[in-house]
Image (cartoon, rainbow, N blue to C red; front, side, top):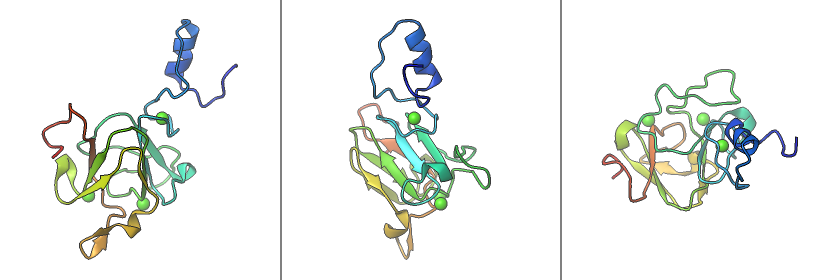
Length: 144
Ligand SMILES: [Ca+2]
Ligand SMILES: [Ca+2]
Ligand SMILES: [Ca+2]
């Protein structure tokens, strides 16, 4: 195959149809942290092999979502320990679902390598995040 296995199924299908594909094509939930995604990691320091959830959309409730590349305790809610935002738009992450509780700002194309170093009251943001959104013009009402 001309391209590596990191190219997602949707991209391969597009190539088969003769459609040109940008190199930075964002593939939702393929365990690769592509451009225009938010990449949530179970461990600190962006360890994709220890659990990653890479997505292209806002999420108002992590409950029921899971890490990829993960075999045990893989639920997303209250388990995220590092973050990459690869979209050129700033983001908010929230303590609770639907934008509830405290919020953590991450810059456009910014990241947090270790949420245990980001204070949340007397505690930290490690294993606390439950929803997120990009602060673009189409953001939902709960993205405050
Ligand atoms: Ca991806
Ligand atoms: Ca964690
Ligand atoms: Ca939470």
